[in-house]
Amino acid sequence: MIDPIPDLLLAPVVRAALAEDLGRAGDITAAACVPATTTLSAAFSTRRGGVVAGLACVRLAIAQLDPTVVYEPMAEDGQAVPAGTTLARVHGNARAILSAERTALNLLGRLCGIATLTQDFVEAVAGTRARITDTRKTTPGLRALEKYAVRCGGGINHRFGLDDAILIKDNHVAACGSVGEAVRRAKAYAGHLVKVEVEVDSLVQLQEALAHDPDVIMLDNFNLIDMREAVSIVGGRVTLEASGGVTLDTVRAIAETGVDVISVGALTHSARVLDIGLDAVSN
Image (cartoon, rainbow, N blue to C red; front, side, top):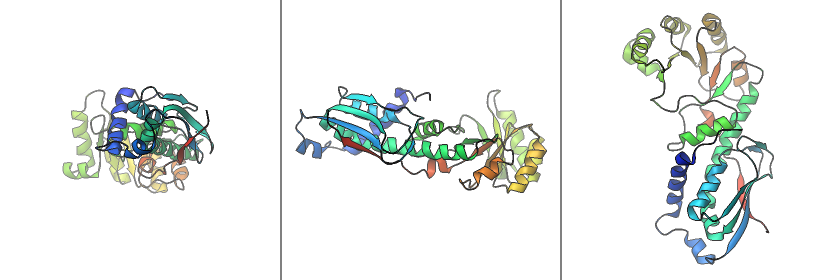
């Protein structure tokens, strides 16, 4: 069972997407072709198998246009389903359902695609200690939803923004002069609840970072030999994160080096939308 995103956070995103689609005059196709009193029964169903995420987007999109439309979920977020699965049924005002259709499908398909790809990565590292996490390479405005979809797929979340953890990257190091100095400044600045992570690109930088006790060290584009050496050097003293161009073809070998976390930008920037459709059904 996945803890849902509160409607308070989700509803503004859905409203903005609907407003973009409805434009200045609303759905003129539905207005022209469908009498105002017409009712419709329809089902949101998968065209291919995947992991469910974002069903609340369907409920909220339709409720924004007509709160009397009956919404009946037939699946749960986090559930793996085969092609042809009915995810939800709706019944009520046809204009509202048809006008909300594309917004609901866009969000649902996007989030299910992310959850499905995440599950693929999680399954690829099964049996190792490594956990799969996302990055901040998310669609602007959709970060909370996309990171939720990662959780639905069995992954974990990296930081949500610039304000919830310190992550020192190569350009920060360049501005500070060295890895050690950057970590020293960060540790002096951080409150007792703020973690400090530093990115390193060599074993030399790793040793320098370790001397200043960061909470997490990111191994940026390390080869497998150096990654194994880094795990040996650290010996469990800090969390080790592997990052940089991780794919389904490479993630298993990376996990087998003994790193704790593998961050994968592709989870959110390259996930294939899950094909889902809305079809009218008989009552």
